[in-house]
Amino acid sequence: MYFATADGLRPAPLKHNPVNALVMPRPIGWISSMSARGGLNLAPFSYFNAVCAEPPYVMFAPNSARPGVNKDTYRNICEVPEFVANFVGEHDLQGMNATSAPLPYGEDEFTACGIEAVASRLVRPPRVATALAAFECRVYEVVHLPVGADGRASHVVIGEVVGIYIADDVIVDGKVDERLLKPVARLGYMNYSTLGDVFELLRPQ
Image (spheres, rainbow, N blue to C red):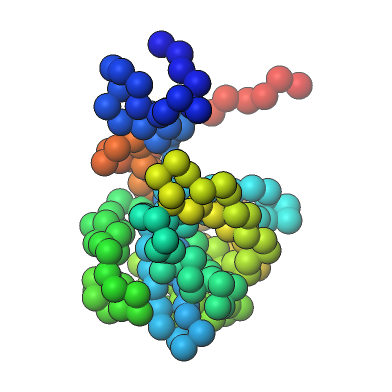
């Protein structure tokens, strides 16, 4: 099949928007942020990825769940333009999922979901204590995307990585061992995936 997106994103026989199912697997950015009053927020975003390795920059998209209501994370980074991108391993899967609950603005997911926080070194929001890796970030730019047909607002937050935490026991022979990180990836709909087979493919010289 083929369709123009201007005509809608669910033409028959599709019953759901296929974009999430096609652009996958996607890493999960478990983003911790802080309000101007010091209130904490922790939320997972599957529209998250690296933008540049050196200098290191990442992006995530705190898109609105419904028209006229911004994500708590977006509200926080507008007040305190810093965040931590915590990486989700298999051991944190249930905790990550718990923090996706729509809690009222100002309610701390660290406390509500029993997630231990550890102070960051260069930014104000803390990182997740059990995360095997985390990026401390300062907001570089926020790109405001056009409002969708359903009235929901979308934003792309680009962050400069100013500090990197890596658990010592996932570093082997000077490299991060992806197998030891045991990352969880987001697929389409409510589906997730783990790492599976890892193989090396060298580039042509």
